[in-house]
Image (tube, rainbow, N blue to C red):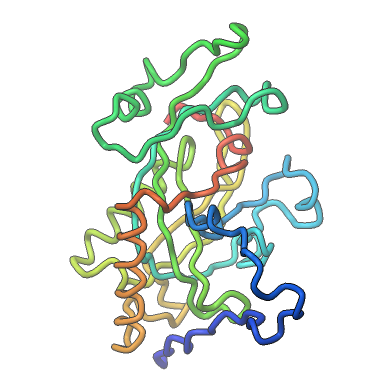
Length: 264
């Protein structure tokens, strides 16, 4: 089967200052606070309980938000290069109080935080909600992969974050193992993913299966062009610097509350 090349990177276009109306020039931008956090676009799996504006998509559809770009339909494969990995630990408020409390009560990137052990221990990851003792808060470990999609014309050149937690935590751990087995730079590996049905005693949902590129896809498991490899390396180093300076801030939104709270 013929090898396929990685597509050339698509540069994002912006409206330059030369097109700005005269009355806007020489006025304070008011965007200084926007640089406080870097929030990458995020992956979303449409679930049967997903409401507007996702009710026009079939459950199992893979999207990138906020642009709402469709990556793949239910059970269809898409491919990506993992640029950077990091974990974050959060304390989530009860979903029953989502209109009364912020969904994330506390969050940390500190590997030495007590939250790490709590999120990994089924005996301790739930605590009584201080505002309403009928419900529980939950410590959650999020495995984050900032990835670059390949062979996808609609979003080529724009990295986004895939987070694995709770019922999908095992999938994230599996992806980490697959990358480690390559014994190569993370940003030089090409992976395959597709939505898949899950079920347990609590219900059913759509998760993400991740694997090496299948033979029938014709996709190489490696970044084969040095220029693209070097570009991805630059992106990796930039993301690493953002993470170390604590400005890389994923948007989890409904990634936890829409999936089954499986005890795994």
